[in-house]
Length: 311
Image 1 (cartoon, rainbow, N blue to C red):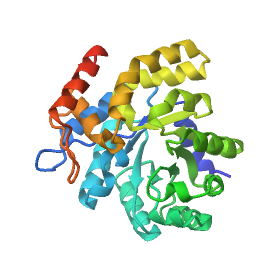
Image 2: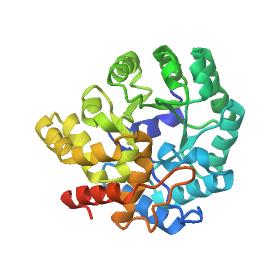
Image 3: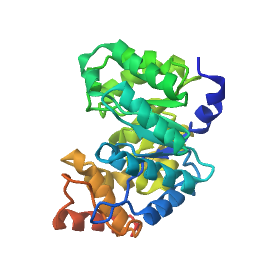
């Protein structure tokens, strides 16, 4: 049963879009605070953006030091105003994760999203449950569960996620396996827990279908780009206006195919390149050892954005 004091936040993040934000860096890898502030302000100004997540996978969280991590969260909190801010939390032990969650809490975050651990690949459900329980007991703040196709997640049984979603601190579950069959099975397995845990999708490549299959919220890095269309798409599905949902999906398909094309891991570099083209970021720097996109791909992306009238 969800803790009563977390229920309001659980309801607030339902039925909308939550961007997992990209972070702007200078060519010397320093945070560009002004660009990030404007980016977050722009996102939360869109009706239907119910929260933002700082330092998630899109934010290159595992590549930062703790000082930068805290600065990113503080910048989000200041820029987001009344919009809730969550922080992604990594760490290959529960002790490390709890320390980082405490840092996020002190920086003003309303809750944290625990990134999967490599030990999830042990396929021992109790280890994942122990992880959430340890962080919850240490920091006592709302938590989001996260299933992702790396960091051991595919090896963790769906039953473990069901047990995690029953914990009193867990207000949401971001399913981002990028596997439609596993996604459908997972949604059906946790469906009876919806009153206490908001079902989210992070499957940027099949969002319309994910909403149809039961996601109340999209927690997506893709929402850094065209956030208004992402809101309109989820609302169209929830309002059973599938004609409009399909129109938006078709319109966005060239951008979807490009940003999440092979290799998919380059979506962060493509997202930042697009944000620079749109004038949101001054630089499209990615933290090493990642590479920026090449000139040919950059020109393709520019043309796609031009066709969307988003330059």
